[in-house]
Image (cartoon, rainbow, N blue to C red):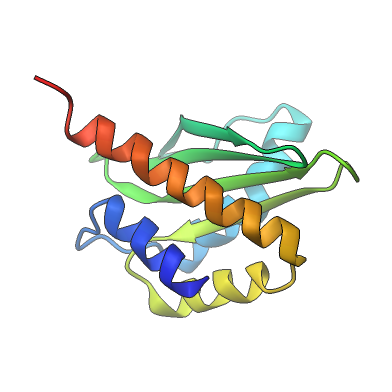
Length: 138
């Protein structure tokens, strides 16, 4: 699973920019609170839809979390929803921060095998979408 996450981050074109702890906490906790209560997104940031992957039992909604000042990628917000149990998980996929990536991976380890398998498939789908975006047909 760790290899899949690392490949996913390479697909985003890791930059010198790094996800801060504050950004990570907002993506994994604050964003959910803002959305559910109708609040604005954190000042200085923009959230853009990236892609959605649906399996029989889960939906994985990926969103870019961008710094407004320079349009750099602060991280990726992952909203994972269980269609069976209606559980919703907000995770932050950090950029260029090993400590936060390790924490992200420990959160994935809490999921059951079927959800991890579906996440793996969603990551592959996400990579194929990114390849299309960064390498359009001519």
